[in-house]
Image (cartoon, rainbow, N blue to C red; front, side):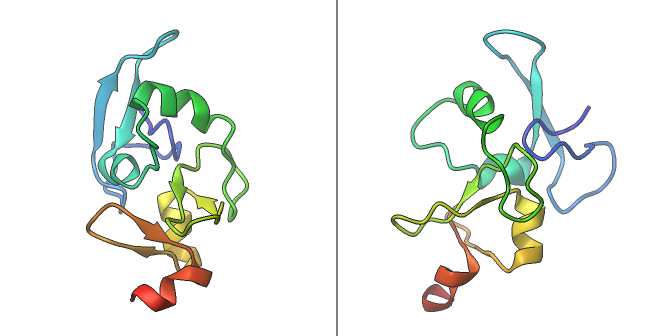
Length: 109
């Protein structure tokens, strides 16, 4: 199995953590998520099932693939990445579950 958001496998140790699930989808097979991918996913008060559907249209600012659910917490910033891509690009991740892109991270670190 692999993570629905980042598409990385879950059967090997990764910085994204263990796979959790299965989570049911409204249609199709259930899905799995890495613990960290789930923690930093910007959900805007929607269910994981709805976010999984929306993530198919969310492309990453670093690798350009879909499933990018980490969104910069700064108002009016739409920088969106996968967790691992965000680490490589210099995103700041906080224990609160928020993240800031490189442009907005400095005032908070």
